Image (cartoon, rainbow, N blue to C red):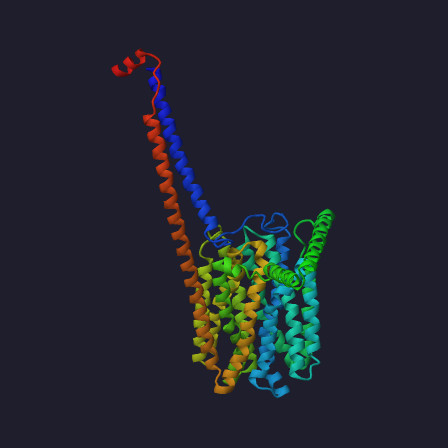
Length: 537
């Protein structure tokens, strides 16, 4: 009887082991599908604590709050600065006797270079670090803006205020965003949303400051003073303390030796293969550079990043145009210059009010690792685009005030989630290069946006058509991002379910076979007494 009970227990244990193997196979198949369905895709993930680079753990606080405060000031002096050029728009047009198209190239070049400098910024960050790069950017932007006060032609203004100042902005703001991403992982959405209030701070203060300086010193004196203000980016860069220790001398020596060895091997192979070998080595170097600093490979390997980059680039064609033409549009319909500048200040105040609130909301535990940040971002882009219709249909101050309220609210949400969605879409180690590529794509659209709007104004003599065009642009960009992410999520879910079902079926067949083998395997009986006991039972 005892041996019969032991046989029954053995059968039960084998069945439990088979069930456990099925459960483990289900889990392993699900994990395998999630990691292999889309290579290099990290959409809807918050990243680990060691994303910060260099093997250092992100503190999610401490000195990171000082970095956030410095980033707020950097964004206020860089990203928000082109909006105050609209205050000087009419004076520049009258002083240089230029058309709307010619004058609009000044903020267009500044904004375009600000975003196009991403690859150069990525190289400098890799060679010099974020802190030094930000300081160099502050020096460039301050000197460029001060030199623009002495410009005698629009071409000189394009070079000084457009190219030099814009490049300084690029070298300052991109490393600041990267530093915030290194210092925060668990609270990354909150930190990014909080740092984005810097743009709101600049939008609310710079137009009022520019209007005061214009009335007191003219546009040349204003540009000189603003150049001194921009030098404060150097102070902000000085507090951007690198996270983790610097590489040891042994590691640096090892890297140097490896590079020298690779160079010697390349030179030997080039001597053997001749021109063909040199071209092949040059192409390999160029592709390595593009992958490291511009992340072109992500456009093919990461569909989420591809959809986000295309949607963002299309949105930027008309996103900054209302900030340039709002003041000229208001003054063209009889609104005083001071009240028109007040509209820009109100836009900034809305951003200052809304962005901290969104930072607190998105930083709540229920939103950490949320799957809906991309959809919230796309909805805000859609609303922002549609709001431009309000500006095209009204010309009174109360109507423009209503437009500023809706536009400012949606703009705040966009600014709060702009970098969070990108960090959730790519690995943190690829974030600087991904940001550089998106910046290049955006710069092309930002360069074309204001001049195209100027051509539209010169041909129609109506500012309203500019805002209607911006409405179409923004709404279509929001719909594209929303539908693209929805389709990719559905496709990923279908692949996960199909692979899970296939793996589950195979595992179930194996477990059934094991159970059958266990049930019908011959069991030797030691004596006839045991068999008699089983028969009696």
